[in-house]
Image 1 (cartoon, rainbow, N blue to C red):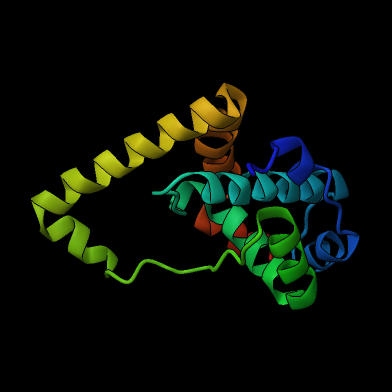
Image 2: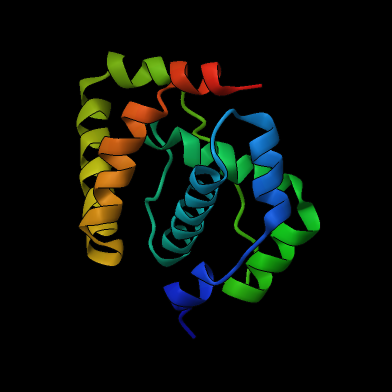
Amino acid sequence: METKLSDVLSYINEDVVDRFLAMYDIEQEEASKIFTETLKWLWLGNKMDGVFIDDSTLIIDEMWHNFILFTQDYEFFCLNTFGRFLHHQPEKRKKQDWYEDSFNIEEHKNRLEKLYEGVYDHLGEETLLTWYEDFPQKYSIENIKKLRR
């Protein structure tokens, strides 16, 4: 049974959003939007292989970390929504390795292209632009650090 995106997006957890608001100096509406984008991210990660966080989607990763801290809620959400627990597994390879090996650079470009295509095909142009144009500008590493309370 495939999980519908609309079912995922119907999930609400005010505690997760409230904790995020306590951690970051952003508006309620923006925190709710980031939570919604994180739910989309989790849905896509369950749907297709090759989904990963990069510098563009760091704010989604921050919200995901926040959601995971509500361990019972996160486990319940995953099991009831996807039928399995979605683990957060960071990249094991050091970032500098990507720059030192031209094969890895090409491999990384291919992974990004596949991810962009998957986001576009499954979630649409608006989500693609939000994740890879809007979020990198608003939520760079530096800006995330400035927003932390």
